[in-house]
Image (tube, rainbow, N blue to C red):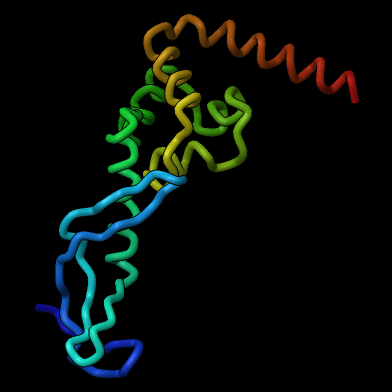
Length: 147
């Protein structure tokens, strides 16, 4: 087992363990089974290395996607590529902020159900993309003329 120093008591008796970990993501309770973490044998403190923390964060978000039946990051990428859209174009089409699609695709953020449904509909009926673009352009023009 890999041992590191405890940040709480300074002991070098911290060892890697696996334990179930409970968390919440956007009000959704999640239990990650056998999450990797460190535990100090001297003071009992449990903590995560940066690598363990990143892995746990990914596992939590994967759990939420599975629980709600949402597209995986890989499926989002595949749909976007099928539609021949850049990340920026998809953000513009859906009225999202910068780098939101990047975060969906690298698994750092779970997409909202509405975005998930819109992606699925575009995957089913790619011909609707042109109509959606036209409608989005019209809405932007209308908003700009109102200002």
